Image (cartoon, rainbow, N blue to C red; front, side, top):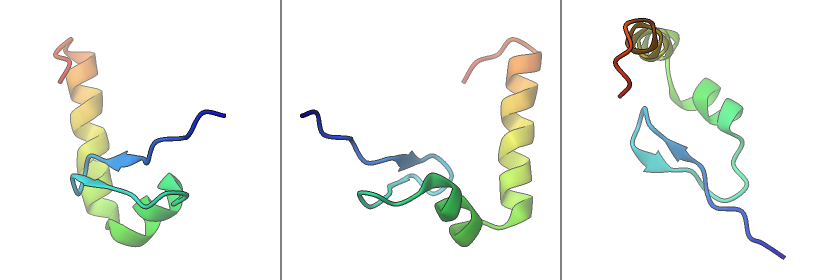
Length: 52
């Protein structure tokens, strides 16, 4: 049986605990403006063809 690797949060540059839900982590650990800024940055880099 293959083991599932822990998820990594690129906002806080930390590995989440085994079994921690990514959505719950984002909702509990990050503020909406921080999430909006990250989404806007990703969208702009894709829109302008500048992958990170």
